[in-house]
Every structure is written in C-alpha cells, then in structure tokens.
Image 1 (cartoon, rainbow, N blue to C red):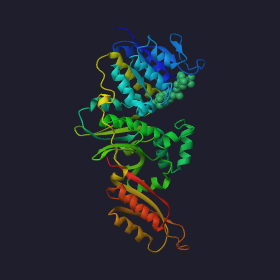
Image 2: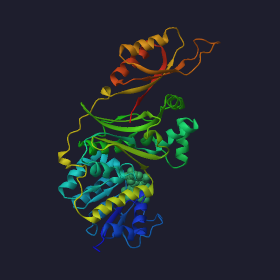
Image 3: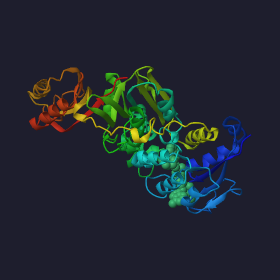
Image 4: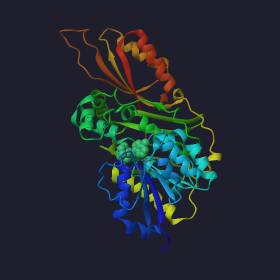
Length: 436
Ligand SMILES: NC(=O)c1ccc[n+]([C@@H]2O[C@H](COP(=O)([O-])OP(=O)(O)OC[C@H]3O[C@@H](n4cnc5c(N)ncnc54)[C@H](OP(=O)(O)O)[C@@H]3O)[C@@H](O)[C@H]2O)c1
C-alpha cells in the first residue's frame, strides 16, 4: 500500500473531533477504500488543555493554524474552525499558497471568498473539497459537479437549514408559536443561543450561493440573495396552508431565468403531497432540475458531527486516491460567468396572501378591485373568522387568498394599494408558492 496521506486538522470542535475519531476508528476501512492510509499528523485548536476524549499523543500540536497549514509534514490541510475571517481564511490561503489541497466545511468563508480561493487553488494545481459545507452529510456537491454535469440545470432548491425546518415542523404538528418552538429547539441543542443567523435565512443563503454557482457556472453572489426569515410565520399561516393543501418550508431556491439568476431564501408554500413537503424535523433536502435527468432529490442530515465528518472524510479519500479532481466549481474558476441577478419583482408564481380585513361594507369589494386592476386572478378565497353578531364592524376578519400565477411586481402593487385604501389592519402576509 502507498504512503499515508498526512493530514493537518485545524479545529477540534463538533466536526473536527468527529473527523479525528472517524479517521482513527475506521483507519483500516478508509485505507482499503482510499488505496492508502489517511493519518492526522498535526492538529490545532484554541485550547490545548481542553479534554476532547481524543488520543492526541501521536500528533503535533500547533497553537497557530497558520503554521499547521504551512507545515512541510502536512500533505492536506483540513479547516474546521469556521467563520469567514482569520484564522480560517489565513490558514486556508496559506495552505493553498504552499500548494496543498484543502478540505473545509466552512460555508461562510466560501460564500464570501470561494471564487478567489478557487482561483488560487487552481493556479497551484490543487483542489478545495467542500462537500461538508452544503447540507452536511448529503453529497450534493459531488452530485451537481459530477453526476449531473452533462445537464443544463434550470433550478436547484431545497431545505438547507435543519433548525428552521425543525421549528416549522413543530409549529405545524403541535400548533405552537414560533417563539415556543424556537425555545424548544434551543433546549434540544438544534438552535444556537443567538439563532438570528439560522432563522433569518443567512445560513441557508451561504449554502444556496454555493449551489447556484455550481449549478449555473456563475460567480458566487451571496449579497444578491433575496432573504426573508421564518419569524413572521404564525400558527394561523400553517393552519391555513394545511386547509389549502400546502406546507410551509424555509426554502432556498436558485433558478435560471431569461433575465438572470433568481436566488431567494424565503418561507415558501409547497404542495402537501410533494416530496419536499414530506421533509420533517432537522432533515435537509436538495432538489435539482436538469434537462436530461429531470428532477432528482437528495435527503439526509444537513448537520451534526458524524454526518458532517462523513462528508469531510469522503473528500479526503478522493484526494488520497490521486487522479484528476474536477474543477472546484464545476468549471475553471477563471471561466465562471459574472453573476447576473434576476429582480424579485420579475418572479412569477402563485402567492398566499393573508389579510386582516376591517368588517365594513365594501371592504371585500375594494380588495377584489385592487387585485383585478393588476390582472391577478384568485384560485381560492377563505374567510377565517366569523362575524360577531353582537359586535359587527368590531375585530378585523382574517381572509386568506391564493392567487394563480402572477408576477411579484403585480402582487406588490396590489398589496400597496390595498394598504393605502385603509381596509386592512397591519401589513399583509405574503408567502410565495413553489411547485415541484
Ligand atoms: N456543527 C455542524 O453540524 C456543522 C455542519 C456543517 C458544517 N459545519 C461547519 O464546520 C465548521 C466547524 O464547525 P463546528 O460546529 O465543529 O465548530 P466548533 O464546535 O465551534 O469548533 C470550532 C473549532 O475551532 C477551534 N478554533 C476556534 N478559533 C480558533 C483559533 N483562533 N485557532 C485555532 N483553533 C480555533 C476551536 O477550538 P477550541 O475547541 O479549543 O475552542 C474548535 O475546536 C464551521 O465552518 C461550520 O460552519 C458545522
């Protein structure tokens, strides 16, 4: 058997420790399939004293990940520190500059500087493995970059954040509020103490930006993603969705359109009988529409120590086998097209609208009139609250509308006019519908 591939492992937290464990517990299994042993020779983390339950007696400790990345005894640098800044960024750059392949789970770093890092790697003739950076254990990078490479992809979309999917599933199944389900997710360790990054869609956006670049051969543009989080979703929306034959999911959707690429992370309604609607709890799912293959969907754990380590080790085994690694973003980074953003106003689709309508004569007629002015036709109208005979004209009544396919520009104009007319309380709830 050939010489061992020597790994420098920076970060020994949730994922790093699991990678270390997998490589030592399954050393023979990995060596047999990779054609050579894969051995961690150096590690780095913040605290040397912390007991991680790992036997680090045969590895060199580096206080500074940058020195580990450049260590001549290291063949491949594995970055599992996280964050788009240093030392994750500096150590990855250091390893690539020294001509070493890098494996990372760091979506934040790649979403911010992936193309620049890919250019650096390709100029040195080395690769960056990042299967673990998108949807944890689900092999979506390999699928897009290799398995469906002969397809022209028109859409890549899915559930990219397990925390949000857990919260929405609990809200639906238990009829609880967003705040109650978030607290439960925090208690179970599914949500961070500061959950903003997950629930406002930023985490999904990082992953979507990488998927869009791979799918469409464009540069990464995380800034152009239209973002809406799940904190505005109420149990009433989930209940109405169910009655209308839908479920609400936080979806990342990237679509090729005539005017450019549309990227959005928004709470979205999907038909209740569709495969995407059946993804519950912390699971992730990614679907790809290719012109040759049709639609494929991958489902699995999008996070967690062992699932993410599985993806990291898969990338390491590819490197250990040698041979030609496919271009990092599916084509040479210098050939990726500049990202051209499709405006959200040009989005076409169905919409769910929830309004709190004042119980006044003519209110419904005025709303219907505003919709008609924008040529919006309604698929269904549901009035949720009964009129209180003892207090007519009292509390506003909830009205839920589902539109036929229309443009977002028309919907926004109609809703602005409805608000200006003063027939509704507060702002309308608007949720896009995505069809499989
Ligand atoms: N957790 C998941 O399920 C998951 C899933 C997919 C992707 N990821 C990605 O994987 C990466 C790692 O995530 P994680 O959950 O394993 O994070 P984590 O548990 O917080 O571990 C981070 C590790 O980095 C070390 N570190 C932090 N700052 C450092 C510094 N300045 N110098 C050296 N070491 C430093 C920490 O050292 P100490 O241990 O001494 O504090 C720790 O070992 C992130 O990019 C994350 O987005 C995670």
